[in-house]
Image (cartoon, rainbow, N blue to C red; front, top):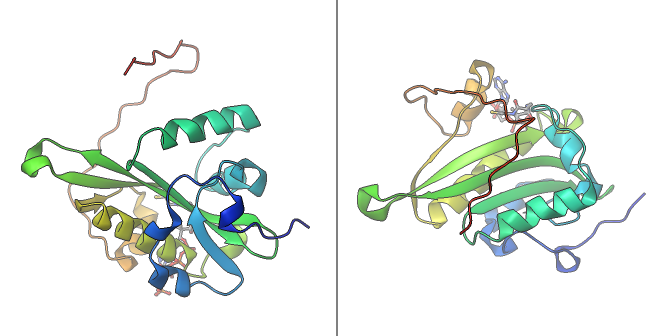
Length: 186
Ligand SMILES: CC(C)(COP(=O)(O)OP(=O)(O)OC[C@H]1O[C@@H](n2cnc3c(N)ncnc32)[C@H](O)[C@@H]1OP(=O)(O)O)[C@@H](O)C(=O)NCCC(=O)NCCS
């Protein structure tokens, strides 16, 4: 079984100091919360996400390319994970990305995305800890609000996390599978 890899040996998405110590302290001693690492494809990251939605396998090169793309946008993408120290495998994940606005005197909004807890670990308040950490990152980055979309069945969970229901979500899906992707030059 792989042994636990400390943060100091990992290439991380953002500074671990942005994760509040108070939230980490609430996790069991068997668990550790940290930013996503470039090698987390080897620690079940995709398999944990698959409890949420379809998550096809990626090559290591594809995974690293996506990781690098996120990290190339400073102070924007914050994905964190909870790792089981005993197995060095991920058991919970979540992200917040920071939107810069021109309204509200250059206000910022935090968007929470892709919250997932491995089935075997659900009900241990890991989802709650992920949301608490992401909300704190959003607030400490200067966001005036943190928002997310969810299914009706998850509304009670997010209410327990301190969120309230506001307005509606609209969606329009696009069939992008067979089309070349246009990457705008920055
Ligand atoms: C939703 C999810 C993230 C919750 O994580 P979790 O670690 O199991 O939940 P927690 O243990 O942190 O729950 C915190 C509180 O919310 C409650 N809760 C969690 N899910 C709930 C649900 N579906 N309905 C009602 N209450 C719920 C818990 O009972 C707990 O309440 P308590 O404080 O009174 O004990 C997890 O079940 C999951 O990964 N589900 C599949 C993927 C998914 O739907 N993700 C969300 C996408 S929007």
